[in-house]
Every structure is written in C-alpha cells, then in structure tokens.
Image (cartoon, helix red, strand yellow):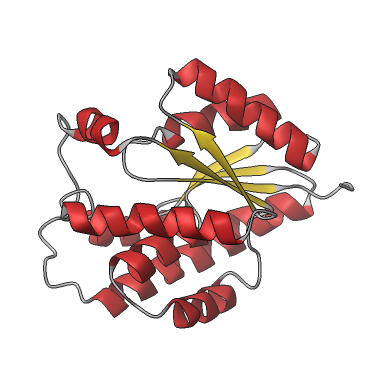
Amino acid sequence: MGSSGRYIALEGSEGCGKSTQARWLADDLGAVLTREQGGTRIGSLIRGILLDPDHTELERRSEALLNAADRAQLIAEVISPALDSGTHVVSDRSVYSTLAYQGYGRGLPLDELRNINDWAINGCWPHLAVLIEVDPALLEARTSARVKDRFERESNDFHDRVRRGFADMAAASPEQWAVIDGNADAETVRARLRTVVRERLGI
C-alpha cells in the first residue's frame, strides 16, 4: 500500500461498540485515534451544539453544515497531517455518518451532502469504512441506561432509516466498505475487525 498512512473509519448505530473498537484498533496499529464530532478543540464546541438535547430548534441543514465544519477542521488539523507523515488514522465515525444521519435519517438530498462534504474534507475519504452491525434489540439494551444525547433521543423510525442507510452504502460500495457482526463479545469483535483491516489494507 506504499508508505502513506491509511484512514480507517468505524461506523454504525448508537451502541454498536465502535468507540471501544476504534480505541483498540488504534492501539493495535499504532495509529492516531480521533472521532467525529469533537476530534479537535473547535470540533468539541460544535459537538456540544449538535448533541445538546435542548437544541430542539436546530434546523436539519444547519445540523448538516455544522457536521461538515467539524469534519473540515478535523481533516485539516489531525487526519491529513497524520496520513502525510505515514501514520495510520482510526476514526470513530466519518463523512459516511452524515450521509446516514442527515441523508437517510433527516431526508436531505444525498448528492448535495456528498458534494458539500467532499469539499469540506478536500477529497479525503476513508480508505476503509467498517460497519459494525448489531441487532436493534441489543442496541437498545446497551443504550437504555445512559443519558441520551439529541440524536439518541430520536424516534425508532429515524434510527431504522440510519441503519438502513449504513447497510445500503456498504452494499453499494463493497470496495470501500467492510461489514462485521458486532453482536458477539467485544474481544471477538476486536479479532474480527483486526482480521478485516489486515486483509483489506495489509496492515
């Protein structure tokens, strides 16, 4: 794959375990670990706006643009410099989450979201996106006890659309995506993820 770093994004619904798996994968690869939203100081401020359940008036286009702004800062400040130096990057979410949440979930036009975000990230899409699929009942069990943010409080229909969006994107672009079963215990999922990354990226 050459000497440049590889950009790996973990995607999935709330409670799928991607934050834990992203941390473990970054440790395994000696990679930079980051997240969307909030992977930079400015991104943390944007994240506070997006996740605060009190912001019920936030318009869906504003939501999409705030996500793009967070992403632009993250690419410029963290991801591109790491990749240019030959360091791998593992991210908890990526541009694909906007397509799933603001596109499939909110109903905004996918082509417009792709164009806006391609400009925001200066064409720096993940080399590999890994979808961690978990049964909805298990997702609910994992998230039921915690204080839910603005997105987690959305309706079941919204989250069904988001899950369908991730599945549709993965099925449409198998060269860019891998799908793993996240219903098993965390260590089993970790091993599956590590195998996929090794097989797909050679690292």
